[in-house]
Length: 394
Image 1 (cartoon, one colour):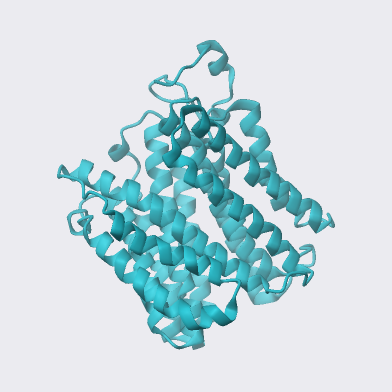
Image 2 (image 1 turned 120 degrees about the vertical axis):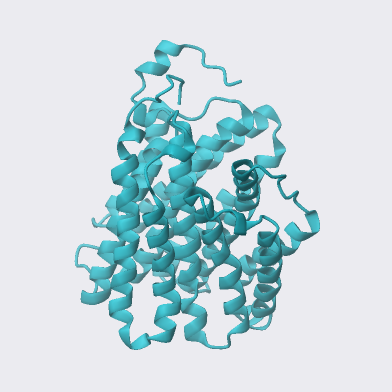
């Protein structure tokens, strides 16, 4: 039971700041649209004059550390309350963390020194890690301590990404981005294995597939190794393909145990399975392909399909549940889920098949992506800004 000391104090907090999912889901989804619109313009017309970092660097950084990290922060700052029973971050404390996330997004368009932007972003990541860590230590819920070192790794990778602009580290920005993509694969793999089989079994009333330690290790350990290999290109050239195939097969076996074929009647569930399926498919295609173009393009099958798809499915579900609504009686979101999946196919497989239409296909994928997140903002935005329907805190 979460102990709220003073209900009157809780009710004086603006609803948007009562729990982490509220501001981060709303701002992250809006930013998902803004960042892609700017990138498509830059892809067609070149470097924006006001942007003080290279446009390609900005695009990748902002999709990972801007959009996706905002949603991850909102999710863990909300979930840690359920994991530990300790009240989640709220009010002014939450506003400060949101501000630390928002400031770098704005400062990229000013002459602010990069060391200052990087430091502010590091403070954001450190603050989220602290909010998780002290609750886990307070309640000795060591199982959830996993997220603290994960955020520390992201903090280090973020500093490294800024350093690559100046050519300081002995590796390029692409190594950092590849490492962070593996960071997200590992995060989604661990979280997906926790929630997807549970949600599926609960909705369709069958016994949940019990985790098998050997299978979880087979699915996740190679991904951790791929994260490390991102910074050692010679070793990566020899080992990465085998690790991807091994992890992809293990991921596929684990995914099949969750009974995805039973989920077609419920969009909030099949969307999770469809998005997760992009992980093993991406791993297998990249691992089995010797073509550098295919290998690079398939990254978007994960980036759009898994990151974007799982985020959209989870924020719709979490918003319903944590605003006091019945999860499966919310707005119709299946067009958004379908749009994200189609965007992933167009941006990855479509461009491999029809590279001569790259500009048009990227624009189409961007339109599908923006439409999906716009639908979420339109249908769920007000829910995030209003008190819970059931009158409970949060």
